[in-house]
Length: 191
Length: 437
Image (cartoon, rainbow over all chains, first blue to last red; front, side, top):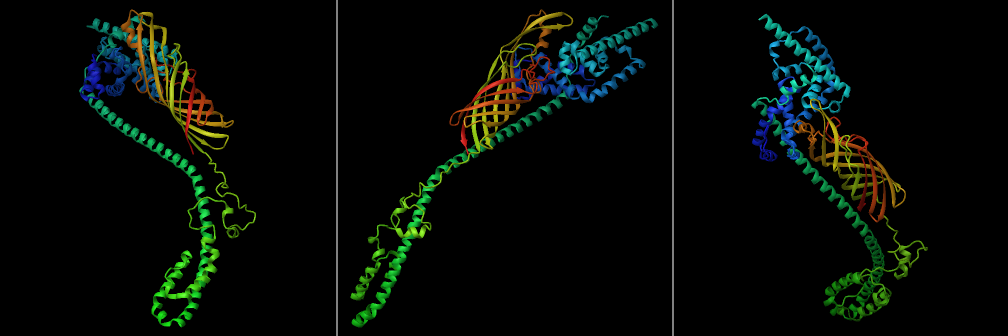
């Protein structure tokens, strides 16, 4: 994401063409973040647009000592977490159901192991199949680098819960990767 | 596979992953930006309308105050006027009586003229017959004129001696009421005077009670007019001092911030009043320094230095107080306040001492307010204070502010964690009352 100062100045004047250029420049990076936290593309784009609106609204507060990518990424993550917190209550109920269902589903459904070849899309798919809260905590801790204390503050959970989510996610992901490896080995033997 | 291997696998694959641009996504963003522009315009109009309404309110209140002031000033002038009018009424009453007396006398004169006329007719009938119409007219005119000013018309030549005789008789009867024989002139310009200056007979007409002291000056005898003040308007400005907002576990340094605004007080009783302020208040922390451990899971622990300068929150604060007036000079107050965040800003610099600065930097960017970000939109607080009126209208006061809420969003990891413990300050101010009504 390369954003020039001149483009930011033009955006500050609310030049729509400049805003489009900025959107285009930010899209790839910010959408990459959103897709890590949302399971479908439409929801991810909605979050992206909400975050972009905040970025445009607060461009006058941007300090050019900080890389624009980092600043925009931080706003994007906070937008995602804000949205998650807003919907947390209604999602809490679903989360339990979701988690149990997924565990059950995972035991009986066989994956198309060919898709899990460690490319970004395959790994992302693995994360998406985790329970929502677990996936978010894993993303925040492992990919974004937040500490458990920070995650606990962000998501209104305890540090213990945050650690538990990461630990659960690691176990699940390891299990799936090992399953993939075993399946690939079996396939190669059969072949 | 160790935990670190797993984490690195996901981080390397997903951290810097970019998605190809989807032009359709822009349509939604474009419509959101358009809606935002429209909303901003709307807000601008609302603000403009609010400003106009505020100015109008100030103008109306100012007008009421000025009118009240004029009314108060005019009260004394009106009192003087009414006294003068009363005097004039008294004089008019006297003049009317005098004129009545004159009229009666003139009526007597007419009768005399009428009585004298036949005698004149007998002595000089032809002359009288020739002149009668004009003389009669002149007599009527003279009679009517005499009712106005108590004097006789000049044209009486046709009546000869008879008229002169009548006139002489008349002059004898009208003498007591003529201006020449009385010091009181009903047609002199009105001037304040004491009741003793009135003709003695008017006292009996005007005052039934014999106890009224005729030497009491009517103007000075008006009851004192002391208006009851119920409303007070003023301006207030001061400074507040606190340890400033604190970033997480990092210690905050002291901050002194200004505030100013309008104040309105309703005096429910001499001892008790309600007061509401509309204040623009800045709260800040300056020179925040700190260092802390930061855990970067794949590189071990590392330290960095963080500096945030001029963290500022701009509030519209509306406190409501119940004031207890110990006496005219001193008052104590307790109340609650509602604060709305107008805007917040900060100026952040970051010095990383880590060899992995690039990895740390994105995580350590202090949060720049992004609307729902660092500082909460609303703050509620309890306040208590004391005020002393040094001179008429100029007071000095002090207040303690204790925030009931965390002023920041706790979930933002790098935001200032302004707990209730830190959300407190002391302020001192000067207050000037510019309108009592």
